[in-house]
Length: 380
Image 1 (cartoon, rainbow, N blue to C red):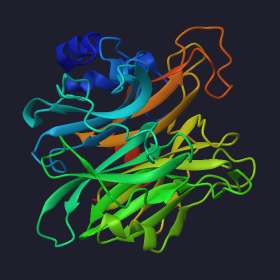
Image 2 (image 1 turned 180 degrees about the horizontal axis):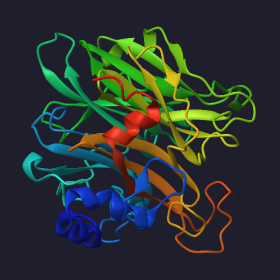
Image 3 (image 1 turned 180 degrees about the vertical axis):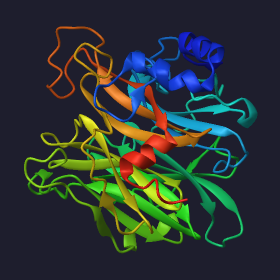
């Protein structure tokens, strides 16, 4: 099955590439660098596919240069009711796969859905991920011997009794089937942001609010940490370091900095992260940090917003997460999760308000505009 925004695709195919940003202006987010490509989600819930009939979000993209087979791969979290062995349908979050060929790729699709979706599902009821799988984070790298390419899928597993955890599964067939690590969970009460394979090492970025099981609550603000390992199995024993702290009291990211997705431009690394001045897990905007080495990160200082949630009554009016950024033909595209109702009359400032749902949108700017916004347009 092919999935795409038909109305938007017809318009863009009929228009020169140079007009794309002009068209995007119709969906303008005033004062923000990234602009929505549609007033509607590009991946919407679909009752015809039970695994993504309630929510569809957390998109993660592997470009042809990153993927195992030279195609564009898109993994996404779907929420819906899946059949259990007893015949009952139970609500779970799972991970599914979509693909596009490199020579005909368009960020708007069509995306070809893998017929066997979802490709990664919950474990047994008592398992660390017996309830949900969230925040899919794929990366292709070498195995422990350094001889074989493998696709690792990091994700947040959620159990019925112990909450969330960082977990990982591995695929040796190009990202179709996965085997979960026997040593899962890698660590409880944390969740993945992104994973980069660089210079034969895995850079595992994750969010941690220092949950105290005795107090049954977080003891710190949600911040971004890093572990660097030769093999994902080494994560548990690897040294950890804080790489992105929350801002000063009253600043736009004073309560949480999480969900950072990383990409490379002009020999610099950039991290698009979600943040909030009020909530730990209901962010209203994205911002950017940069690094020369993946270890030391600095937040961009710009008076202009990078991206923010939609206006009241829109499908993404409440909160936004997981800004998955990639480049294509001198443009910077971003899939993102948005929470909202698409109707007026809801209190969008109430976290996870009843009547809302998570779906996936698409925003864009030019690479040139992004680098200028960062103050980095001087580097080749």
